[in-house]
Amino acid sequence: MKAELLLHGGIVRTMDPGMPTAEAVAIGGGRILGVGTRTALEGLVGPGTRQVALGGRMVMPGIVDFHIHLLSGMTTRLYATALTPADDFPTVVGKVARAAAKPGRRDWIVAGPYGAAALAGMEAPGALAALDAVSQGRPVALIHVSGHGRFANSRALELAGIDASTPDPRDGHIVRDAQGKPTGLLHETACWPVRDAIPKLTGAELLEVGREGVRYLNGLGITGFCDASATREMLDVFRTLDDEGALSCWAGFNLALHPTALGYDPEAAPELRAERRALCGPHMIADFAKIFLDGVPSLRTAAMLSPYASAPEEPPVAMALDRDGLAEAIGNFDAEGMGVKVHAIGDRAVRTVLDAVEIVRARNGAGGPQHHIAHGQFILDEDIPRLRALNVLADMNPPLWFPNAASLTHERVVGPERYARAWGIRDIMVSGAAIAVGSDWMTIAADLDPWEAMAGMVTRRDPRGRFPGAHRVDQALTVEQALPLHTRNPAVAMRFGDRTGALTPNLSADLVVLDHDLAAIDPMEIAATRVEATLFEGRVVHGAL
Image 1 (tube, helix red, strand yellow):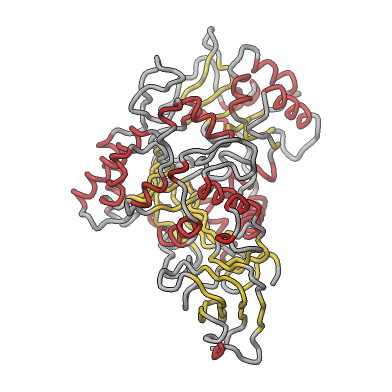
Image 2: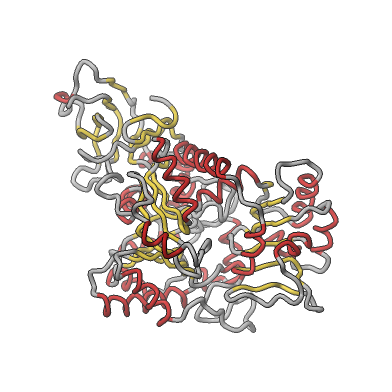
């Protein structure tokens, strides 16, 4: 086959250890035909080959976002009132007031993400009354930056069936005033009734959300994603796009097949599990399940071995499952060949996952599927070697490994001493454990930015210059070390490694053209990287060549 496209005269970073860099890449039939020098690829050039001189620009495999909530994130982007984590409570109230004054397609006002500044005001007396006063009788649900909390007004609480007599659900907390009445703040599973009360999008609206989500990813240089807690509805959306030829991303799904997972439907779960492969199109895979074990540091719901510095009198956080219960749950999926992604942030939760997987390996055999610890930033040094030994992947996200509003909130809540040992990415990499990087969009920011995340990984500083200082510079990676964590590693972990994730012959031509070589510039400038073109299966899906 002669090449349809030849890119040459730049730096091609392949993610292939046998040939890490090249000068040219030949593409045909949606595949990589060859990688090397322009001269070496001459035999692949024919009269119909389009040749593009890169002029020193960089080509690399497309980013694969290993942990994202694409439909919910894009729904918020398209249908919700935008907040920022830096907004204080009066600012949030003002934005809600303006939204309430505008007629909309929906009665509900959904807004987010709010952060520590607004949360402080929400915890003060009178916050619910202040929100009610500007809502004009419409239900309001505000979403915490972590995704693990909500602040709802009285109308929303009423529609959700939450009042003074409502007990705390398992693994959730309804914050109450001195008289026992809900204040509007809801943590963890206590948020679910409010979420469920919000009218669902129509099928057509949801399909358009998915379509816009894929466009958004391609514009950022992303050609693969893995949804962290997926439902049948999500599979149907992306299957429709795949059937239309509009799914220009490899799509993986961690299915909500366990009661702890967001979106779990006990009636639909057995059928979803049994039919998961038939529900997927050629660019999809759904051989993974999701389990939530603990919460998040900002709400003091992550399970730690010692008390929170900000609340030393509080009892230990209760996890959704104990070690044996978690081992039983993982083992059930493991026996079927399904990988399990366990949300575990606190050091106690991380250790519990490792202990549970150790039990599973002993029962089911050491050759079972790889499992994932999502987030896991407070893993203890002594537990790091267990990741490789047990074939547990470190799913590193969201990008809190450098100073930003969310990471500084975590540091304040857990204490400087504990936070000083968080995010040991280099130590995990040196141990030989598998690492894949995701955004967890949109848990800490309204905009997804893989290049800012990568710059922060290389420098451990805020590449935008908004927050001074650095976090554990000894854990910084080189560009060459960071790139596979965003490309090859997540593709392999999604079981797409034989199809994408590297620029080697016969793999899919999924790549991005960048305006500069990431390894040849000041690492702080990586955040300003411009994606000039994104190709999926050899066709341009963003920008131009």
